Length: 113
Length: 111
Image 1 (cartoon, rainbow over the protein chains, first blue to last red):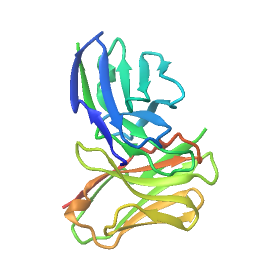
Image 2 (cartoon, rainbow over the protein chains, first blue to last red):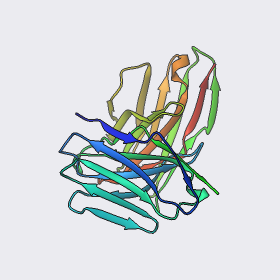
Image 3 (cartoon, chains in turn blue, brown):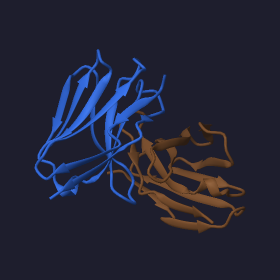
């Protein structure tokens, strides 16, 4: 099955808090898991991505945690800021030669001061 | 560095009118190109992808079509727009590896 299930649909976090968005997949052939950040009226921007040979990847305040056995991965945003308010999409792809990213439905994050 | 352009940025068209959206990529050669549609408040739906000039694969049967007349140009077209064609249209590219990069999008409103 090609679905990627993303939760929650929306998230409100206080400034300085930790934002956590979760995704789950079924297709064990997926081997690339990116996260995209999208601001209103803009195209999605690649934020961070992980391959299944590592369990965690960190870039600044953004961390992906990956659990291969559970077929789950999550995005953690540390010290969340109002400027992080956006919609976040997880995605998955199988193989470098594949031409399709399978996207989750998105999480609208609001960081309140 | 690579840059992806889309135009127009916004478009309002009546039902039954034709459509042509254009996407171009700079700074790379022989990219894979993609058209997505994003309905209001929803995820991204892959419409078409292309691995080379004249090579188009369709993911969703509908009244839209795509063409790739040049290596770095991707066009989305329709002969007659439907109300349901309204949405945010995104072009994306990659170089055959994993990372896929999106353009700024075109907001289409069919009235």
